[in-house]
Image (cartoon, rainbow, N blue to C red; front, side):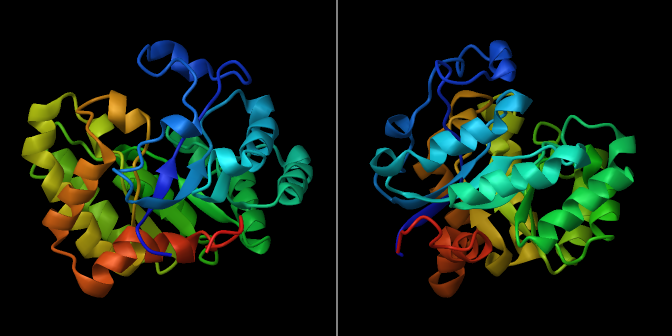
Amino acid sequence: MTGIVDAHAHVWDTTRLSYPWLADFEALDRPRLPADLDRADGQVTGAVFIQAGCAPEQGLAEARWIAGLGDEWPELIAIVAAADLLDPDALEAHLDALDALGGVVGIRHLLQGESPAVFSDPVLLEGLRLLAARGLTFDACITHSQLTDLIDLLDQVPELDVVLDHLGKPPVDAGIATEAGRAWAQGITRLAARPATTVKVSGLSAEASGTEAFEANADAFIEHAVTAFGASRAMLGSDWPVSRYLGAGGTFADWIDRVHRVTGATGSEREQLDRGTALRFYRSTTLGHE
């Protein structure tokens, strides 16, 4: 496969499923379908669907809808579905049902809203171990203040392949030179020492209050994360449509250009960032794409 693999794309149909969180974001609260996706002026040749926060009881229905899109989303190569890792009684059956759909390669249980106590809950740890045993990946979506808790949790399940969404949602407005920014940088360096972890270079524009803070501070966060992980453990994501319509906004093509410029990646390093890491991490051709 050539071109860009968008490792973090959302779609949703609010006429089909319920997304309670959208009520707080007028710009997003309508159907956002595959036909609407930002394909970076034709650069995107592959895409990974990331669960989009539907009502908890609809996680299987969301994955089933995505798996059935077919020609409506020809670039789709993998599905990261929702699962409640804190519900051990239902988790096995839920994962079995997802497996039967085909194309589900990973799970995301949103951690960004969880309390510190959840990270030390043995039920969550056992859920992660179950994902590893079944060969599923885990998308860790946290805020920068949760990095230490995440690292302590993942230390207990070294066999699990994990990707950190949106560079761990760093404090873009504050900047990397602040106390919060330095703490984020230290956490990223620690997490990058875990071999089975990769990072998504995505989502920063939604973490900024506007274009001024984004333009002043985004590059330093990108540079530190990609330097810490290396291009072979970093992947590009659009975070569409969230990063298009919230915060600083901007197109995926602009984001790709920024990451290429900041990292200076060329040749094999650019190939890893653009597609190689994502194809490898997300098991590549699960939906029949080359």
